[in-house]
Image (cartoon, rainbow over all chains, first blue to last red; front, top):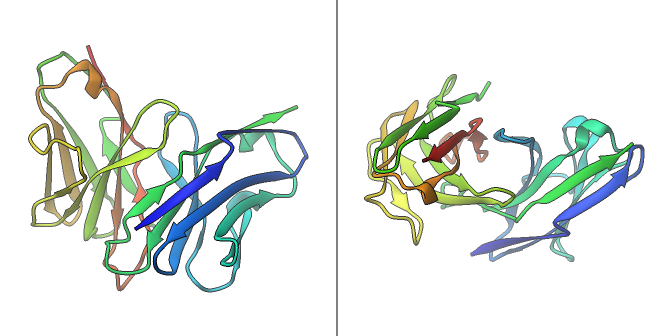
Length: 115
Length: 117
């Protein structure tokens, strides 16, 4: 079984500031990990994914995340926030095999960016 | 590539009626499709997993007779909400994936907003 915990349901940053969205996972086998972004009334867009290659993963729109096995974490960062980054962010985990890669999502973190 | 569409994007129906939502993979053949439900300001809840040509596998607590899922082809899955009630109002999102040995990513549709009056 797997689970995801996103610390902080709401994160507020100033434009240009560092963005840090936290995600911790639990998995009985080595996981695949994902970060998705959702804008209001839209589906999910994949930001980045970890699939057991490089532990530092770079995604779209300047986001990156680092897989830390010892901390069971996969935090999402961006050096400088932009107004357009304001959205809901979901961390998700799937088992590597045998489950149709069924995703388990965290509860989400709403990011607001202040001018 | 890997585009998934949903139709309709929004639907309003009266209580007691049924409504069908389509999910299509536009440029690939999807071995597996997933249906999620999302309540306002909440996460996605997996409702069911469907493989082409076989019955859907429903998550615990999801009523099979209420949420009928048909995965008739490798590019189309449908979710029918039968005898809809106001509490069925929600945002429904589908996703599609390739065979496990090819890819491990789910590609999401844009979602369908269902309002039951």
